[in-house]
Length: 280
Image (cartoon, rainbow, N blue to C red):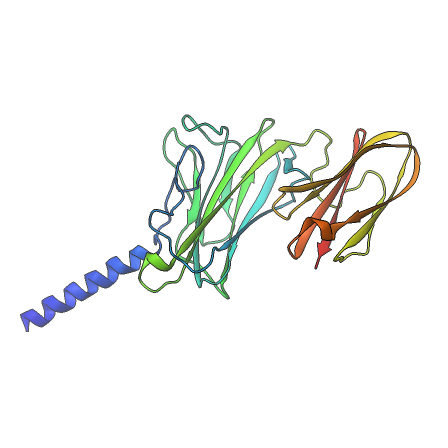
């Protein structure tokens, strides 16, 4: 009887240890892939069949080129998706791209979703990480609040893990991303905020789109395309244009874009306008 009880205890311990190997049950700090951390979970979680998708959005939205409004509170959403039933993540927003001496840039507020938490260490960056492996329908979203600084660049680093949840970490896969957030100098931080009229059609589009706009004066024009995370995909137009009505045709099919939501940002001198476009 004692042998049976001992065997059961050993089995329970082994199951418990196995449960902790596929994904940390309490989150983990300094695994964002930043220069300060130097790693992002791949030492344990590797060999998965596919790389999870990692998307970062904000409400209010960051402006074109990942600009923020000074001293503004954002709800930041980290969405992990793919072929895995459970996900975890680690994120930090720091003041430096150096390997040493980084501290928080901006201020982390409360968590919005119960599946994430703040982890703090004296003199080191705050990390936002998962409280437990999370997922429904092969996706998970972690949300928290962050108040932007008064000025300067903020460097966001984030890593996510897709876990197959089979008791082993060898079938998992990690992914990472980074964003450089800079202060908006024009006061325009959210998409679809337009100080002058701009129209995009057709929308959704698969190949050509046309931008209609009117310039009050001769201006240096720049049109950039950004993906949903705020990363610049391409500079579409850069030229000097005369005042009056303009119809700018852009061939999206040449850019080999994935299906999804993008932003087209138009700058004319000291004015700017940004509009969403859906590519299919």
